[in-house]
Structures are given as structure tokens and as C-alpha cells.
Length: 471
Ligand code: SAM
Ligand code: SF4
Ligand code: F3S
Image (cartoon, rainbow, N blue to C red; front, top):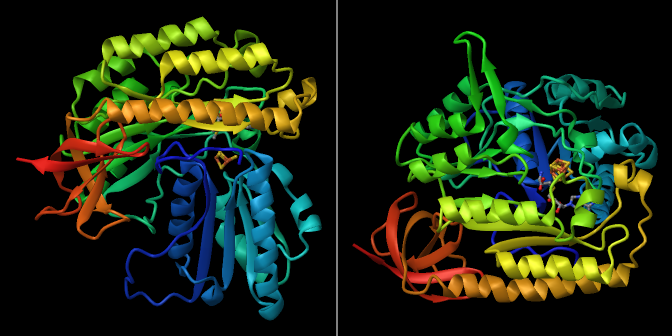
């Protein structure tokens, strides 16, 4: 195990989910594509952009790979294990292609960008390799592939944001939607492949973001999650109005669409989150009191090698500032164990930082060297795998205690919960999330999906609050 995933949220890295059409619109498409997505929420949001581009070209979506003319895998390169999974899946699809030679198989996303044309060599039966900034060219590349040519486009762009494309919400519950507000990343965390697979940071026009959020609200959606690798550095200049829009201002504009539209966001880089952002969260009830604030390590020496640009003390001061301005703010983190040169003392510092912060939620991984990154070029991946895993397990064990304590602190409290769907365990219960992003389960009564309810918490597990609605 190299990661711990508790609740499904926008912060988690997901592994292979097929999209299915929300409803059959009755349109007869000439061809069908099947898409499977891996990785972060941004990749899932991209799959919805891809669906929109393909449907405009008369290629409809199917959730049955046997029925598909085109199979697309939207891939993730963040850790070696993520790529391994995709390669395994590709082998299965290749069997399908042997039975159906006209089938087109495409690799999209971060792994396509990282490995580029090599994928065509390595994986002989792949027909398409398309990077994250080249999805507009997919229809043309599919046409080429149909004539037997291999289609490759891995050009990264400085300005592509797909701003004008209305994503097609294929797998949606009709309540929560991801809205991409920027692409790429300008930070050079030494362990991270994202700047290489997603290119330079660029912000999407605020006008198009607001329009997308308004349209979602008018369709009945009740929650939007604004997505970027580093949302706090969102910056857009409205040339027409002659004004600039910061992340705090963007969030405010989205919050003002309606008090019934909840706003979430991910991910915040500790170095960039400002008091302005914190006071905006505090000001609006519909901006959720929840911040994903990845720390990565508790050792200043390791943080320096990771190029995170803050020290342990600086991070802790930021953490305390959040709690000072928004006392009930839920805070989660990402942690890496066994980064290059990490000593037992460094590891203890990570554990002691976790002990101080007692995160509500944590995503923990052991370090996986990514070719081409700063760390791979500069440092030796010198912590043995067993040590990385043992340190990870110690961290996971500690976090289990913290997350249970965090849940237990909520016993007896009441929360406003947005109903997202039927609980997995019982058709007599709904589940939703509170402001702090915790999953809450309660009896259905006469409520419906999309309603806001007030729930008093009576019980809990490490991952779920259980309660009853009150008037
Ligand atoms: N932009 C976000 C940030 O700055 O935290 C998220 C980046 S990444 C999609 C999600 C998490 O994966 C990171 O926060 C980090 O903990 C982890 N990660 C990234 N590269 C990794 C690597 N080479 N090995 C292990 N974990 C890694
Ligand atoms: Fe990777 Fe760092 Fe950018 Fe996050 S902020 S995507 S960890 S380089
Ligand atoms: Fe993975 Fe790319 Fe996201 S590497 S985590 S899919 S930006």
C-alpha cells in the first residue's frame, strides 16, 4: 500500500473509473468512445472536456468498452504505481483489439505527455498519444488513426485553458461538479512530475468560470469545486474591464451566484494562500470551511530539498493563522515518507508535525522517484523501500487516531449537510458532506438529493459521521 484514501474527495488521486453517460439523450452517434480516468480531479475534469469535444464531432460516450469504437485512457504519472496500473489495463485492452482490429486505443493525459512517442514504440497496439493541452486535436487524430496512421500530439501550450468548452458531466450525481480554473504548475517541487506533464501555469478567464458555475446552478447543481494545482496563484486580467481578478475575488464572484451554491476549492499551496482568501471564506457561509494544505514533510531540511519554499515553522504559523481566522476550518494534508536522504530524525519531525496539526484528513504516500524531475536529477533515491513503507505505516497509524478523534469531536454537534445520494450501506439512508468535507449519513425521511438538511451527530466511525436530521 503506498497511499491511504479515506473519503472520496477532490483531493484524492483516483484509479481507473469509467465514465458513463448521465442519460441517453436520444441522439444517435456515428461512433462511440469509452473513457477511463486515473489520477487527480483535474484529470477527471479533463475527461469531461474531452467528452464535449468528441460529442461535438458526433462521437458519443459509452460505458461499455465492448461497444466502443475508440478506447481512451486518461492517465496519471504521479507515482510509479499509477503508471503500472495503467500499463496493466492497457494489456487487457490490447486483447480486445486483437479480436476487433478496427478498435482505436488512445493514451491521454500525463503519462502520454511524459512518455510521448515512446509509448507507440513500447505499446505497439496504441494508436493515439495525446497530451493534456492537445485535446482539441483529438477528432482529427482519431480520423488519422482510422486510416492506419498513428496520431501523436503532446504539445504543451502557454495559453490553452479550454475556457470556451462546456464540459459534459458524464458520471455526475447532478449535485457536485468540478470546475477547472487554471492549468499547469509553476512550482518546481523537486519530487513532482506535474510541471513536466501539465506545463506552465495559466489561469482561465473569470468570465467563463462564472458562466460555467451559473449554468451548473441553473441545471440544479448545488456544489462546485474550483480546481487547480495551486489555486491561490489564480490571476486573471480582464482586459475589457481593465481589472484583475485574484483567487479571493474569483471565489467571491462564484459565492455570489447564489447562497444555495456551495463553493469548494483545491489545492492550496501553503506559500500562496493569503489572508484575503481566508477572510473571503469566513465572509461567505456558502464557501466551505475546508482547506487542503499539503505539507509533504515536517523537516525543514527535507522541505528545502523538496523545494517547497517554506520551513516547518512557517507552515505551522500558516496553519495556526487559518485556525485563528476560521476556527472550525477542516484542514487536510498530503505527506511523503522516505524522500531522498530522509533520516529517522526527519521522519520523527514529520510525525511530530502531524501530532501538532492533528489533520482531519491526510493522504500519505511513500516517495516514488519520477524520471526527469529535479529530485531524480539531483538526489539519490537512497531510502530503502522497506524503510519508506515502514515510515508510511507509522504515519498512517498515527493519522488513524487523529481522524477518529476529529470525528469524535463532532459528536453532539449539528451541521448543515448537502445531500449527495443514497448511502452505500442502506437504501433507507442518505449521505452528504458538511462544510468541513466530512461524510455524514442519516435517515432519508422525505428529503431528496440536493436538499440542505441540518443533522445532529450521534455516532461516528473513522470515516463517517452518523446522525439524525433536525428541523
Ligand atoms: N498541487 C498539489 C500540491 O501542491 O500539493 C498536489 C500535487 S499531486 C497531484 C498530489 C500529491 O501527490 C502531492 O501533494 C504529493 O504528496 C504526492 N506526490 C507527488 N509526487 C510524488 C512522488 N514522486 N512520490 C510520492 N508522492 C508524490
Ligand atoms: Fe507538484 Fe508542487 Fe506543483 Fe503541487 S505545487 S503540482 S506538488 S510541483
Ligand atoms: Fe496525476 Fe497528472 Fe493529476 S500526474 S495527479 S493526473 S496532474
